[in-house]
Amino acid sequence: MDFFRNYAFRKVTRHAVHLAAALLLAVFGGVYSELRGQSGDPVIQIAEKLKPNTVAIKTVFEDGSEELGFGFLTGETTARLFLVTAAHVVYGHTFEQSPKEVFVQLYNERLWRSAFLVNQWKEHDLALLQILRPPNVKWESKCMDMSPSNYQRVRFIGTNNMEPAWVSPGSGEIFQLSDHQIQFTIGTIKPGTSGAPLIAEKGIIGLITDDQGSASTALKLSKIRDIMATGVPAGAFMLTSVTPVTSVTPVKDPPPVRPVQLFKKDNLAFELLSCKQNGAFIECEFNIVNNDRVDIELHMSGDGKSRIIAASNGYEYFANNLRMAERAHSNSVSKTLVAGSRVKAVVLFADVRETVRTIAKLEVSFWSYATSSFAMEFRNVSVN
View (cartoon, one colour):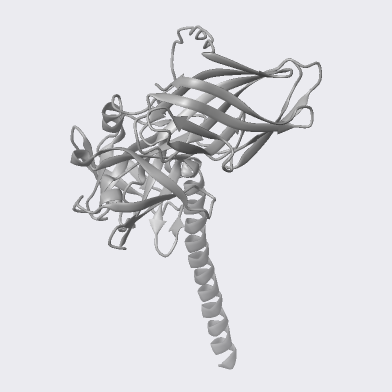
């Protein structure tokens, strides 16, 4: 009798072990299958690729309160980065608050950089900001998807708790489209995500303006492109479609810009190309030519040593950002000028509180072991 009882017990035990093993295989096999599927998910892949395009934004209002949000890069010049966000991130949800300071944090940075308002379109809940362009910043301009569709799967980048995080927590889908807006649902979206990019499998399709989760709203990227077709600085919108171009028309190189003034120091020549004002910024570009037979290590200094003087009232404005070729810094920058070579340099003057028609004196400080210290000077420079 004991033999039959032990046999039955062993048989039941074997069946239980086999059943448990089958259940574990099914569970972990499903998890593995899901993770493996996600790794090849095109929406996840494009979201990861576009994290460097995404920026965190913090606005401090005059009453001391703050608004958190996100934005994404749309263009650049040699000295500036342009980005868009929801206008209510800058002006509050009622659009009636006065921003005291606006800060931007780039991907993989801990530094909050000062941002400046370029333009706003409150009727579309859209604002354009700019920051001084840090050196070696990399982002993807070929990221524009102009054809969102109903039931399309979408994700977003960016969450704000105590600190901004460049994450893409979960996906959702579009349930309604209008001429300018995208209605979508993503259960993980929370307040603090306004201004973030809405992403589909080919790229960015919109800018999130309402982050309610169950029924959120984004402004179509095609509408943003149309809005920014006029009334913004050159280079503010450089996004292009990810759709392959079937035919390419050859484009001739533009003719070289002729210098408007020339300054020489020993075997160095400085060719002033232009000075342009955009809002509170004046940007002066010039070429530096090394006519020597040897290479020269040239240093350009800001730090209160480089300035412009307005012709109308004598006001002085000091350099905020310096660039020689690919190198840039707020205080000083150096570059080896190869013998016989030409490099482009840019000096940016910020916080200009007036419209400057003529610069009485443009002065930029340089030094090298070959020439010691000297100041490049141009006078009576027209500002475009």
